[in-house]
Each structure stands twice: as structure tokens, then as C-alpha cells.
Amino acid sequence: MSEIVPVIMSGGAGTRLWPLSRAARPKQVHALVSDISMIEATVRRAQQGDEVAFHPPVIVLGGDQLDGARDLLGKDRDDISYVVEPMARNTAAVAAVSAEMVAQNHGDDALVLLMPADHHIKDEEAFRVTVSRAANLAAAGNIVTFGIRPTGPATGFGYICRGRAQGEGYKVEAFTEKPDLATARKFLSDGRYYWNAGIFLFKASTMRAELEKLQPEILSACRRALGDASREEIVSRLDADAFAACPSDSIDYAVMEKTDRAAVVPADFDWSDVGSWSSLWDVSEKDESANVMIGDTHLIDTRRSLVYSTGARVGVIGCDRIMVVATEDAVLVADMANDQDDKKLVETLRTEGRLDLL
Image (cartoon, rainbow, N blue to C red; front, side, top):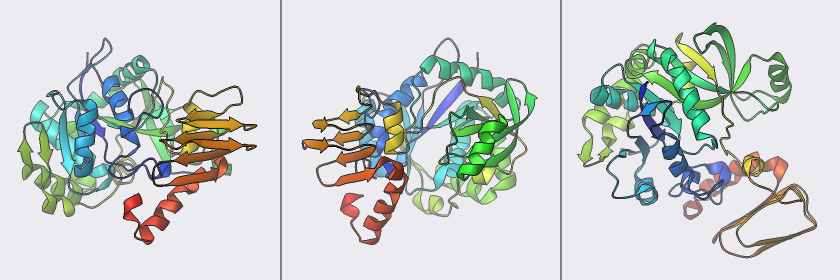
């Protein structure tokens, strides 16, 4: 049985779920799909089972998110450790920090499961089975990503093209970031393409070696930030000056698109990144008119819509395919087809200096 250290990336703000998701309370601390928050669900699926032996998880997040995460996961728990980033530096930095930390604490050959805190995976057993299937590939020196079988020509996801078979998966032939609709349709009919779930499994030594070769500045800055970190019980705070010098890049661009060690294992579980209000509608239970209603809401002659309220009563009459999200200080109303434009509202607020709403 493979022993794996789960490292959970929880530093994102989830701006496409504004106005609910904010910097200090991002989507992963909300109970969007079930009765527990997304970060709690992520920790729970990374529990030791018959399929795989997980070490206690490490959660990487921002300083303004630490108290909220500990409140949800239990302030008295000493089996979860936290790494606090002084500023955001994207996912390649998290990969570098996690590889260094896991190598120091568990050895160079320990496996790291790097995964976001804000994804929805309902079948926990199927998730662990898939991770177990990928473990031999990772132990052999591959950086494994998990491919989701597409259910439609989505343009909001990155795609992975599989190459020759290798072990329980395939070598990666190519990555494509968020194609246009025509290209996505070609990928769907081709049959070799998967959605990129943004979940990675690798040996600590493999990631360190690839970063040393491909992104030495990222690795060097993260080593210094971790080496000079302040530590108090289960919380490590990366050194701000050292981490500020780290280039900001995603693991996809910095490593996966450049390495010859990339492999993909098809996922045996349903998956959603819940990256927009329409994707929340997709994975949520619906009434007989295909509506999703959360909070104090009432709908009349309305179909295929999502209405979410954290407090105020919201009524909707005679609408189709709309979304209404009401919080104590902001309201979003949009056609479901335009939900990807939510981030434009966030950028406008930032330009206007409305940091109170971010």
C-alpha cells in the first residue's frame, strides 16, 4: 500500500463565485454542494482507507484564511498542519514548497498528492482507488495528473491529450489551455483528450529535480522561504522577503507543459471544480423545474435557474436560465450563459477601489 502525503491548496479566492466567495472567505470554506464545507470534504477524502495510506494533510493558504480554516477543521486538531503564504505566488510555488517540506519530513521518495481544496468529488472511495492506481507511476518518477473524461465540449477547462500507454495510465502527449468551442468539439470526438483536474501525484525528489531544471528561481526562493519560516506548533509561516522573490506561475505552465515526465491517469470518479455558478447548478440537486434554490428563496414560473441567498428573502418570477445570488452587501443577477463574466465585475470593483466587497 502506497504512503502519500496530501497537500491541499487552499489559497484561492474563487472570484467567479462572487459575491459569495471573497478573499477572506473563499468558496472552499462554504458548504456549497453538501452539508460540510468544500475544504472539510477535501480533507475527508484524503483519509486513510483500504486503498491507500495517507499521512496527515498539509494545508497551504493565505494568512487571512488561516483562522477560518482552523475553525472549520477543528482548532484542537494536531493531525493537520498549515503552511501560510505571505502573498499569492500561484501553484508552482506550492508544488515547490510541498516537495521541499515532504522531502525533509518523510524522505525524497515520499509521494505528494497536490490537490485543490475547492473541488467537488462525491465518490471518496473511487477517488482513493484512482490515486492508488497512479501511485506506481509516480513512484517510478513520473508527475501524474488526473484526467477527467469530458462530458461535453467545455471551453473553461484545460485539456490533456494522452500518448502511449504506461502502467495504469499514459504518457502525456500535449496540454491545451481552454480551447475555443470548435477545438473542444474536435477534442471530444477524438477520444484521446481529458479535462485537466489540476490534481497531481509525484515523488518529492521528482518535483524538486524538475523544478531545479526548469524553474530554478522558483525552487530557490521557496527553499529560502521555507528555511527561514517561523514555526509555532502546527503552523509554518513562510518568510515574506524570500517568498516575494518567487516568480508567480502555475504548475501547468512552469512544469507540466515542459517536463518529459508528465503522465495522465484517467479518473474513476465524477469531478467538478465548481468554478462558476452554472457549474454549481450542474452538480446540485434540483426541483421539478430544474431549479436550484439555496437559502430563503421563492420561485414562480421559473425554470433551470439558480437562486442563492445568505439572508434576505429573494423572489423570482417568470425567468429561465438565470442566476441570482444575494449576500448581506451585494447582489448578482445574470443570465446563466454569462456566468463566466462574473470575474469582470470583480475586476471593476478592484479598479474602483471597492476592496470591502472583495
